Image (cartoon, rainbow, N blue to C red):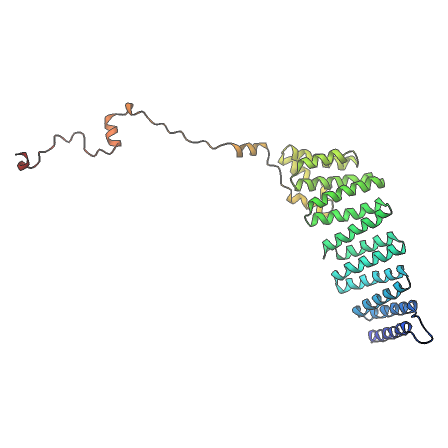
Length: 329
């Protein structure tokens, strides 16, 4: 009963909005601001009535009206509300373009922080369902905040990007993103956070079986970060560089790595362990062949030679019997 009452109230607000948009002989211009306010009221009523599609549509109409008056901030806020409705409707794909439009409106209003925050919220909503689209939202958030040269926020979004890239198995892109993340951290003065990113970078290099690249990463970024994280990264590299399988297992089982983001800690299960020098030498060692000794025929007895070549006549069989008498004559 309450839902029906709210739906009827929403319909009245829509009628009012349509009246504000109409022109007449004495009213030459539509009143977009009042129309937008009426559509917002209608959206609230439809939300209470649990009519989510109509609620979403009313927010979209309010956006169109606010854009006519160049009220970009209010238009973007309505798109943010529409995203929340889309989340309840589980319309994950539709969230992506709506989020990009909201970001653009916030930027036109002159609020890059709010624009990046809107992208971040949308990314969190769709991350489990559309990880690649969420990655694009986080990447755009980095671009938005770096226009204003805010590396601290950029580092936060880069962390989310690198985590998703590892989850998607895009290790080359993850290496580039982790490198950018450490650069942002250093620019922002957050040197303490560099160590975690360095350990993650070494793990990604090891899952690609590129120990040399892991060593170069340590040389380049090892001067920054906390000593504890740096020690974990050095132990990882040393174990794999020395081809010590046991030491590698111990390094991968370090508590610091286990408490990293799930995507990075899962790498410890798929990183190929070193085989070790002993196993490599055993694999390269040729198999021994048994030598066959052939005795010289001069040392072999005549009886053995006859038996060897299949002479079926016994040695002591006596003289041969003469053939037929007629043949002898």
